[in-house]
Image (cartoon, rainbow, N blue to C red; front, top):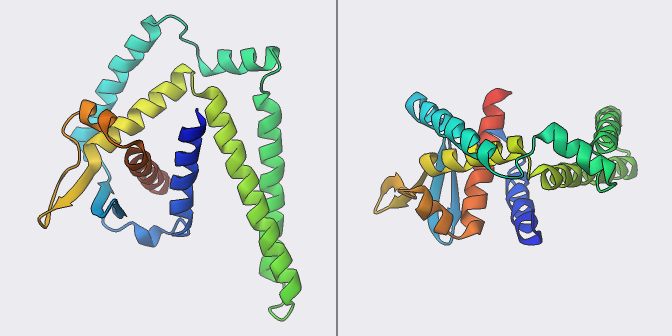
Length: 208
C-alpha cells in the first residue's frame, strides 16, 4: 500500500473514530456521510446484491489464480519472514500483548475514583497510545499482505459492495453513486476510500 493510500486509510479510520464507532450512527442499516458538499450513504446489501458479489468474487478468484505471481497469504507470510522483511507471527504476538494491556487499562480506568483526576488522565492517555499502536499494526499487516490472493479478494469484495451500496442524494432523491465499476475506479480515491471504510465498519458491526 502506497503512502497516499495509507494516508487515505488513516483519514477514513479517523473519520469513524470521531463518531466513536458508535452504533448510533448506523440507522436502518444505512450510514450517511458528507463529502465535497454532497450527501452520501452506504447501506447493507440485500440478498440479491450479496449473491451477485459472491458470484463476482468467485470469478475474480479464478482470474487471479491464472495470473503469474499469484500467491496465497500463507505463502506470502512465509516468504516475508524468510527474507527478513516482515514477521507476521511476531507482529501478531505484539498485537495480542497490546490487546491485553488495553483491557487492563480499561479495567483500571473503570475502577478509579472520579476525584483522582491525574490518574484518570494518565490512564486515558495510555489507552489512546495503545489504540494508536494497534491501529498502526493493523495497517502494517494489511500493507504487507496486500499482494496475497486472500487480500486481493477481500479488497475486490469491499469495492464491489461499495459500488452497489453507495448512494448520493440528488434533488432530494437517493440514486446510485456509480453505475459501473469503471465509474467507481475513475472517482476521486478519497471518496471511494471513505465509502469503503464506512461499509466495512457497517459489516463489522453487523457481525458483532
